[in-house]
Image 1: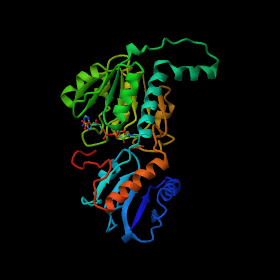
Image 2: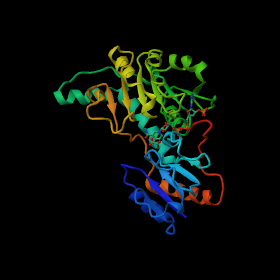
Image 3: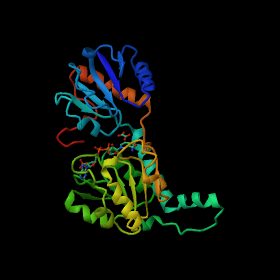
Image 4: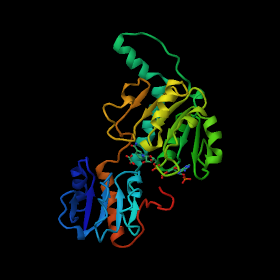
Length: 309
Ligand code: NDP
Ligand code: OXD
């Protein structure tokens, strides 16, 4: 039996090493040089090539290397009998919460303006936005959204959350489903996207949504690039429906050098690094799920094909 690591454009050697430290008896196959397809029973994928996982006759389960699973659910070549799971750790959750807290502070305190002014020796003061004047609205109150909401509440922010089902989270006003989306938006200044990418959520960050936000308004997208309608963001910035945006995820990654986002002062860009699970922590979950899959047990963090996340 073997475990396959398949992630084009990523160095998987640190994870391979961490897996072997976790269990020296593991047989780890590193894509694309696969010795024996028939022995592969478990795979770990990050954006594998199309058809890349359809030809392993004894494959029982696939783990996403991250929290997001749309790259697995979008692949029709993965047999439905294969169980899907993902990796969630407290490090991933707290890293995401820190990123969002930081992005909000940078917006409120005009950090990016001062970076620009420093280049020109320009001593100009901007009125910072007080916490009480900017309500944060988190779309998606799952593993990432809840930890982010908790950290924001601890830091004195007023927080709204929007999800499929109503939540009871200390300090967070909960809104659910489409019929409560407008009320959620009307009471939100800083919109944070922590939704999974599904048929329902694709393109949800659009002009119609931006126009419904309270002023001043700002966007933080840490979900997936497919959530954002890119031309609507540009229009919203040009028409001042939004003050700015902080984006960590993009429709096409790496973001092409020629993309217009690079030249916008009011768009902060990070290269899909909002939060990352360290290899050692990922390895311990992968090995646990590998053993569970071999013995037919339920996996940790199983994905619902029915829900799509
Ligand atoms: P979860 O699956 O744990 O949570 C998803 C949340 O979204 C749930 O609260 C769910 O509602 C809600 N939701 C799903 N569909 C809808 C819908 N149609 N309408 C309203 N609410 C909906 O996801 P995670 O927290 O693990 O991840 C969130 C996102 O963050 C993903 O896109 C993931 O890929 C991304 N991510 C990005 C990282 C980065 O570095 N940029 C790192 C880690 C994750 P309910 O609770 O009611 O089911
Ligand atoms: C993830 C991500 O899904 O890094 O974990 O985006």
